[in-house]
Image (cartoon, rainbow, N blue to C red; front, top):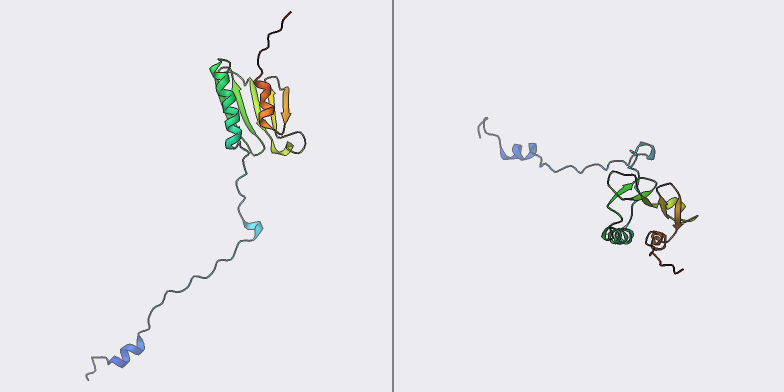
Length: 138
């Protein structure tokens, strides 16, 4: 063997196979270090929207209502009903979960701020807006 050619024994002793190192588990942040989560937003679910939009569709077909808006905040959800797009809302259908155990989560509010009806059942609450005109004999 010459001095310039390394022997096989020297090569195998100096070469170690590389293995991927396992990642160390990251410690969970303390509760005080976590970023504040986004505030939860109160909204209408699919069944509630179906009830409201069925009423809205009937009133649009009758020519009474023309536009609506929906607002979702961390404390309440509001479905506003307009006669024209540029006016203030004619009625507001509100869902406030904080009042669910006290007076009912749903309410219908007139343009003047008067609460027309409040209760736990949306269908019964919005029935105040779907009154039929009665003919009075006299």
